[in-house]
Image (cartoon, rainbow over all chains, first blue to last red; front, side, top):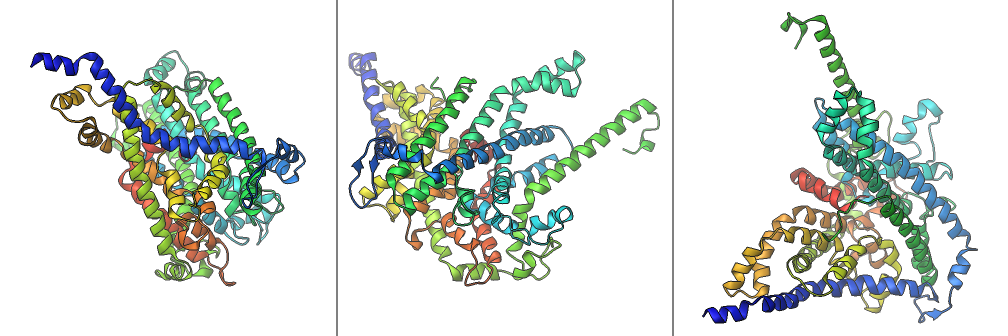
Length: 305
Length: 293
């Protein structure tokens, strides 16, 4: 009996069995990602080297699509639009969400309730956010009336104005993104051991000194994470520009982000090759941000160990 | 708390106490202002759905409807568009995708956490790297692929690419690491097959641990906009996020702000309920996934 047990459960046998079953458990997931991630990722690069309109098979044309993009007015415009959206929304979001986190880190009566109200933009999807903002931005709507004492105007065409519409879309984005980043900042603040603050206090540091010298340096990983994630997600700006801006990315292309260009080329003009080339460009942009994030010291929360 | 209650307090102590209270008051009013600013659009959405069309945009803003229209805007929204169908599509797609991602994610996570096989590290690293690639990059080639399968404009096309997420595998592996090996080994000694062990021992331990994961997967599916937008051409295949954008345009020359706010409220309601009842998991899930980023 013991001999049989030894034979079946010998170390080697167990490991061999495990090897086999581990692979079986992992297999569906590996196949799935091979088919719906790796394959499209590779064909994406290939398609960017072809002329493809969905009607006839793709024709290989080398780097022509990329060469054409360099002269493409809409694409070049979309780079500056995307950068404007990235900078315009990321910088205020990151800084303001830190301030709000610091505010809600303090103790005061009614804090929890107010925090919940502040979190409410976490709930709507980006489509809902867009639809709500379309109404808030009605020419004679709420926002017009809020700024009326300053402007004196009874009607402002927010979303049809080439200067104002990128600004109000950034505003909608800041509104919907802030609570998330505030959560991250707040978690970062909470993770700082109280002893460090106390030690700084004992050494005679006031609140502000303690923030600059103790808390902010310790928040560095959080700061890197918040900046990278918000930059990456702003680079992918699409739905707000698609729904809020007139004619998907208008007026006159002032809200045509790279995401809108990919959609337009792919699903309005059926120029799949060009759309794929823009995707590759966007991919490179985002990888640069990700690389910077890693270089600046990313927390290793996604490592295998 | 008034001064008269503490008659033996020194002036200095009174002053610090006063200063503290003033600072709390300042903190409270600042926080209240911030909360008002960020909460207002959501309140605006919910309350406007019950206001008469002309009153929604009227000045000054009425905090409560002057002329309460009941569910008239909801009714007219349902008359105008197949909202019921869109709602069903969104629920159906989310249900299938969340269930599949939990099951296959648990399976893969369990495999990565509890077994040792050649190439495990590299495979897991590859799956993690998927999370760094945004969906927009895949949009065009994935659409082309789905078309080749003949799945465009179908439920299969809407659902299948979202059946699993790398994030689910990552989270499930984290959870599975905490399953004690002794538990699995004792089942092995009892003669249970590895698959039985997964279904009857690992799954029941992993499922409750994945509440926050399930919420995140649900949000990802429920809020998805870009993919259903390009895959579903047929109006009856649209999901709520895609369909509702129709309401931001006037309908037959008439403004449709009320119905658009009604649909927005309907689309946000399930998420709001999740937030209210599972607040901890909701916030936890958002933080680890970065979904809203």
